[in-house]
Image (tube, rainbow, N blue to C red):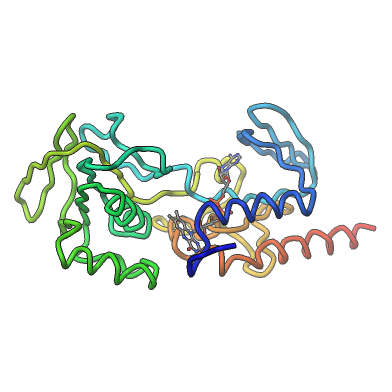
Length: 261
Ligand SMILES: Cc1cc2nc3c(=O)[nH]c(=O)nc-3n(C[C@H](O)[C@H](O)[C@H](O)COP(=O)(O)OP(=O)(O)OC[C@H]3O[C@@H](n4cnc5c(N)ncnc54)[C@H](O)[C@@H]3O)c2cc1C
């Protein structure tokens, strides 16, 4: 049972684990799908461990596996992270957080509350409008009171072993630094989608071509669910508003099956 207003990550994971066991779902863990191909009306699915054949596929691959890189010197240093997994000791560490979205804000608040010296580097002039409404006042007030430092209209231009270089309005600022969280967003695996034959619409947004009612792509029998449906518009779909994707898809698959009989 949650003690907060919203469930925590750990509570959500426990809920999903129980859903899996209550419905006796078959889940193959740690198995990346490498390729899917349609041979006549059957799909062939090649994974790093095995091979499957099926009539329908639902891709709910999200976007979280592919971080947007900054392409700056030092980005591959081991002190640079694109994910936050509650594993590292932050107390007394000089932590730089790049980005002004939900992930950056969550990490800024959490590391600050665990004794870190936190500096945010935000490209825009303010914290993102999309930041959860129950979290936004918290981060804005911590910045206002100076307990979390923030550089707005700024970019990180270099990461060194013990320092970072920030560029703000053409000026370079060097700060001492122990750790960098580059929370610069993520993108769906477009190459994987294209290889599967799915058309992407728009140069910038690359929205996968789906029927908005059934969620079937331009490849019959291949469906998309969840945040991947938004392409680069990764904020368009989230848990609460994509909850009916599964129902729409399964109804379509059942209907098709009945028509074949
Ligand atoms: C910090 C943070 C806070 C958030 N807070 C909220 C919130 O409060 N409320 C809310 O509604 N939403 C929230 N979201 C968004 C929410 O997490 C997503 O909307 C949701 O997880 C999307 O579900 P999905 O199934 O589409 O994709 P995901 O949850 O990303 O799942 C995709 C899965 O597919 C796997 N995968 C990808 N490619 C392959 C492959 N080739 N082979 C095998 N597996 C593959 C991935 O590893 C992953 O396990 C938050 C997101 C973040 C990052």
